[in-house]
Length: 134
Image (cartoon, helix red, strand yellow):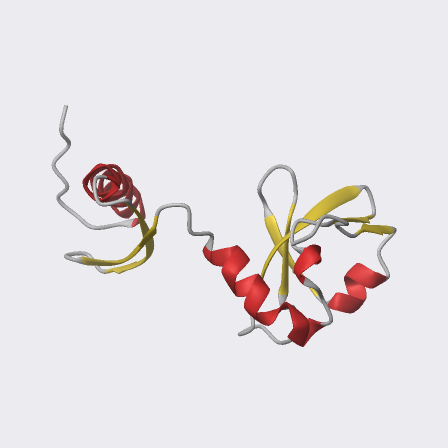
């Protein structure tokens, strides 16, 4: 069943984004690419959605981490390493060079993401740095 959208709101944007992701994924897979609908801005009558298309298998977060990790006192091996703060274990999954105060992105097993400073990670309860070659 198709639902006709009569007003653009947050729920409609979610439906539109889901549909775009499904349709685009099928279309670009034939070209060896992936596509993902991202940030959206909207008013009552229209929505603008950013779409990112990339080579299949390309890990943008890893690519950015590799490019910028040395600026923050990290090494290539630190991508994917874990650390504990309190009762939670976080995994380093990226960097945001546009966030100078909290540039390190870490994720809980639930997928929820948080930002940290290097000092917060170094002073954590434990930091298990990767020993595998990057």
